[in-house]
Length: 435
Image (cartoon, rainbow, N blue to C red; front, side, top):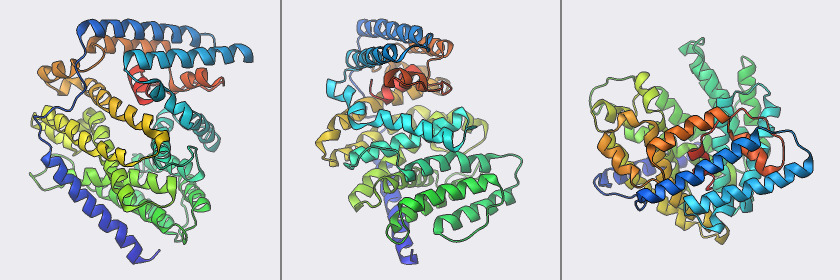
């Protein structure tokens, strides 16, 4: 990889980050890009249907041991009921509720869980969830790019790099000097340079980089490693952001947010395809920037506690979270229109489902951080949601009590026995998979 090749990706990242900052400021905070309102009577009917569905699921999960024929019948019935929920509550079409199965995304999720447990039998619930979210993004990009949906060696390795490297950098028992030295070795491995791992954790990181190299030889696929270096640099910059409070305009929080999110998903794209056109790079980078906004909103309370600087913590400190979130809706509307550039007929249902569901996911995310938003704003968003907010909060408690988890649901749908230790709530799961 020549310095000139690396410079090309750096120039792209800088240019695209600036373009997204301009787009952000052009989004009018008083314009609404939300689904149509849901009448009160319709909300009550939706709640009745979802309650019945969750009660049925809870009952089935209480009897995990059954013969193969019974499990197969239960799998068929589970998929049928979940798809019914998608069409009847969320207004999805048959093509949309079938798209994950048709594209093979559901099977890819199962395969990743197996591979992750084989690589690290001690992997924690939170680490597996973090890694699986990245796998889902890669599978989504595979579908958009017209590629077979599967857990490739590179997708597995890059997704596992998240928890493995983060665990090291988040370890309170390691000094800043140790973490800085690890980052230098990590960067050397990404560049293909020799560096001796200092412990078992670093050995795992090096092994995962080697897995990527086995699929994408450096000389043949330089953009893959350019993109990995780009996200590494972005993460380095984000680690150097000072804690609040800081002087106004002393930190480019917006630019750093978009750079970190954009480069992360851009790497997903290159690991999925090996190479991308400039137009594809722009769309994928933009999607990643938007995804980072969603992550920062979800982490708002923790980031406030840690005195971290994000768009949302800065907005919360001056009482403008409503306006910031409102701008996110507009930003998402403009950015996600780029998905229409992917013309493969096979993924049209997936694209339409994404556009239909993203606003609902954003509203659900706001509800999780409700104490940071005004009652007026929450009331306005609730009118566009298929359930009453108070009902959804009660349902979350029920889901936790009944231990309805991602693996257990996947197990019911796939006729296979999968360990249940990754909790996920009803709204996130149903909206995420489009059912």
